[in-house]
Length: 212
Length: 212
Image 1 (cartoon, chains in turn purple, yellow):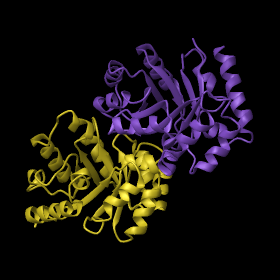
Image 2 (cartoon, helix red, strand yellow):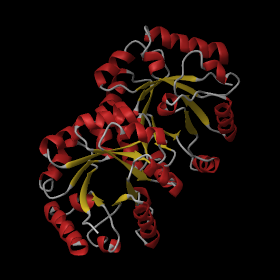
Image 3 (cartoon, one colour):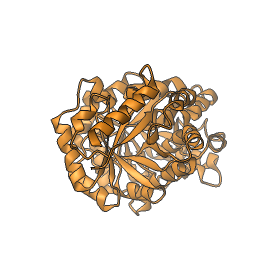
Image 4 (cartoon, each protein chain N blue to C red):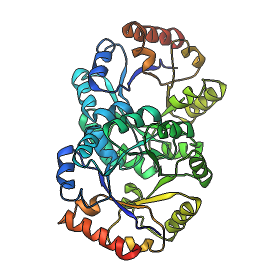
C-alpha cells in the first residue's frame, strides 16, 4: 500500500485570496487543484499562476468537463494543468477526446454512476476517479460511512486510483485505514483553519502515521 | 404554440473574440449565453461584459454546475446572469440550492438521464431543460433524428420548456416543425458564417416562417 497524496482544492472566489492561502502550503501538499468555483470566477489565470509559482508540482484543473472534451483539455493543458476532471455523466467519446490532450483525466463521481460505466472508463484508459461527498450532500447532513468505504474498495479492486473528497478533516482520515486511497483532497479543511500551514503538516503526518 | 427564442452560445477561447462576434448580433438574438469553454477560460468577466453591453437581454451562464449549487449560482447572478445551467447528474439538493440564488436553472441533458429524474426536477420547481447533441457525439457522426424528436416531445408533454442545441443550422430547424420548442441555441452556426448578422437574421426568419 502506497502513501496517499495530499491535494489542496482551491475553491476561492477570486485569485488573490487563493494565492494568499496557498502561499504557506504550496510546498507542503503534493497536488494543487484549481477548483470549479475558482475556474468559473477567474478562468484559466489561477492555473497559469499556480504553474508559475510551483513549476514542479502536479496541478489539477477541475472543470468537471461534460462536453467538448478536446477543447477544454487542450485549454487546461495550455494553461499549465497536468490533470483535468470530467463529470461521470460525460460520454465516453468526450472522455476519450479529453484524454488525448492532457496527461490524465480524473472522473468525478456524482449522482447515479454505475460500475458498468466505471469499467468503460478503464477500457478507455482512464484509471483515476474522485469519490465525493458532495458539498450539498454534506450540507444536507450526510457523512462518511461504511457504504462509502465499500464503494471505494470496489473501485480500487477494479484497478482505479481513487481520490477521496468532501468535508475531510484530520479525524476523518483514519476511517480509511486499510484502504489503498490514492489521494485525499481537502480545501477548507486546511484553508479555513487558524494555521493552514500547520493543518497541512498535520494532514501529512496523519497520512504518514496511518499509511507509513 | 409560441415562437421559439434564438440563443447565441459563445464558446470562444477568449473574451475579445466573443465580443467581436456578438457585436453585430447581440441586438438580434433573444438570449446571450456565456458558454462553458469561455467561462473556463475567462471566468465571470464575459458575463459582466455581456450584461454591461446588453442590459435588457436574458443572459445565461453555462457552468454545467454539478456541486456547490448555491455558491456557483450566487456568483453567476452577481456577475449579471439571469439563468444558469446544471448538469443532469447533479443531485436534487444541488439543483435546489442553485435555484434559490438565481432566476432560473436549466438542466443540461447529457448521458444517461431518466424521465424519473426529470420529474424530480419538475417537482423541485425546475422547468427548463436543454436537449443536446453533444459536440463530441456530432464529431462521432451522430445527427438529429426521430429518436430525438420523440424525447423532446415527451419532455414538452411533461411540462418542460425545452431548449435544443448541438450542430444546428438553418436547414435543421424544420425538423422540429410542430414541436413546441422553447429556444434554439446555436454558436458556430451563426458565428462561423461569412456574415454572422445575416445568419442570425436568417435563423430568426426561418423560426418565424415555421412557428409564426
